[in-house]
Structure formats: C-alpha cells, structure tokens
Amino acid sequence: MKKNVVCPLCESATSIFVNRVRKKDLLKIYKKFIKIDIGYLINSDIDYYECLKCGLRFYYPHITGDEMFYNALQKFDWYYMDEKEEYHFVKEYISNNDNVLEVGSGKGAFVKYLTTDKYIGLDFSENAKKMAAENGIIIENDTIENYAKFHEEEFDFVVSFQVLEHVSNPKSFIEASLRVLKLGGLLIVSVPSEDSFLKYAVNSILNMPPHHITRWRDKNFEFIAKKYNLELIDIFHEKVNEYHKLWYLHTLVRNSLKNYELIDVSLAGKFINKLSSFIAKVLMRGIKKEMLPTGHTVIAVFKKI
Image (cartoon, rainbow, N blue to C red; front, side, top):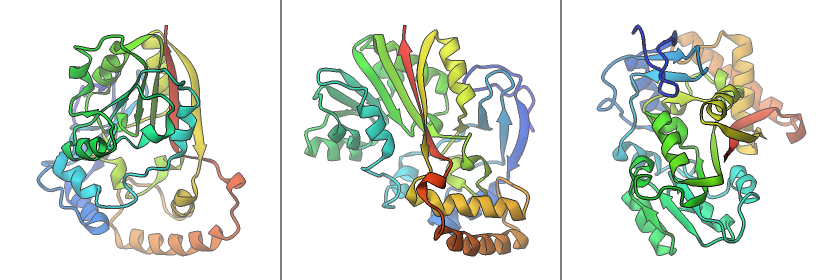
C-alpha cells in the first residue's frame, strides 16, 4: 500500500486505501473471460483508493491499455455499440448549426444522431479514422490536450461517451475540453456509474485497469462544477438496459449470498457465481423494465459560464 497517493482529479494527497487487486488474479480473470493476455501491461499488484477531498475512486498505479489491448477488445460485438441510450439523450441538446467535438469518438457512430454537419472526432485509433473516413466523417488521431493548444473556444459542444474512466489524467482531460469550448457551450460526459449496481459487480474486470482507471459518482460531477465554475445543468441516470438485466440480477443475487469483493477466484466464489447465474435467469422472467433501478451509465451536462 502506497502512502500519499495523489488523486488524478483534484491532486489531493488525502486518498485512503480501499482494496487491492492481485496481479495474478487479474491476469487469470482476463484470460478466462475474454481470452486476452494482459501480462505485458501489468507489472505489479494494483491498489484501489478513494479520495477524501473530491470522492473519486481510482486505481494506482494508473495502468492504461495500449492500441493492441483495445484492438483485441474491438473484436467483440458488444464492445462498440452503434445504438446507445446516451446518444439519444445527448442529441436533444444539439442543434443544426452547432460545432461539435467528440473526444474518444471511435469510428464516429454518434454522428448519425446529429443534424449538424459541423463535427470533428478525436481518437487514438488509426483504424477508427480509416473507418470514419469511408463514411465522410472527420476523425483526428490526437489527444484533447494537444488539440486544445490550437483550437481554443471553437466548439459549442464537447462530448465524450465512456471515455473519461479510461484516461490516466482526468484533470488535464477536463481542462483541455473546457479550453476548446465556447463561453456558454456545453461539456457532456457519460461514464459508468459507481452509484449503480456496478459498484458491487464482482470480477468486473473491464471496470479495472488496464481498461478503467477511475470510477465516477454524482458527487464527482458536483466537485468538477464547483472547481471550474461550471453550471451543472443535468445528471441523467439511465435505467438498467435489457442487455445488462441478467448482469444486474446476477450481481444482486451474488452479493446477497457472499460478501462483495473486487475479485473472487476462490472455489466458494465459483460455486456462488454458478448458483447466482441460475437464480438470476429464473428471476429474469418476472422482472419488467419499470421495476429496474438506475443502470450502467450516467451522463453529466456542464455549461461553461
């Protein structure tokens, strides 16, 4: 356990140790569930912290995936989805003539929801840029921090979908996003919600390094608004989606049978997982959408004032 670990959002050194992810367990779970060997990225055990100042939960060291890691994930149909509830929510804010910058755009799937043609995406992937270009979509292989040096106050909207939790320096990401935003413009970010069932999901490896570095709660958005003198217009929580319903029910059942752990590779844990899956499938039949709580994603809408 490290002392005086600095929070990547507020840079406070008042973070407290919460848990530890063992390297051997993390490698084992990645290999079992998604057939990816991440040994070349992970050099040590990883500690999980909570900042006492801003409330952000984060992993240390801040180990992030590389292009090879994300290329391996892109092979799964469920990884990049063209249809998302968050796209429908955000498009309602954007008008015909607005300038839109999407950070972490992928191939630019969000564009089809827009009526404006003033759109630019930023993404690391050269493959994403090629796919976007085939559809006439402009994607630049650049970081928001570098892009902001040359495009101050150019955009009416800066949006990012499921990106902030991946970056090792969310503070610089947010500050650069605000730099390219016009006065009165909106910064809209969606992330997995730590105020949802995700907080209790065991062996949720994609919510850990090298995939996710941080975990976000509503209180973190309130901190950002106060720190950067922004108006927090909305915090929107989607309901548990149909494709997450079984996962939600499994998590609910599993944690009623055994105490929560970040990773559980024990024999007892394996038995509980199988039993939980069986019970969750039975419960699926009687669960209607209106009965479900808040789900995977939260969207925060900030106004630059």
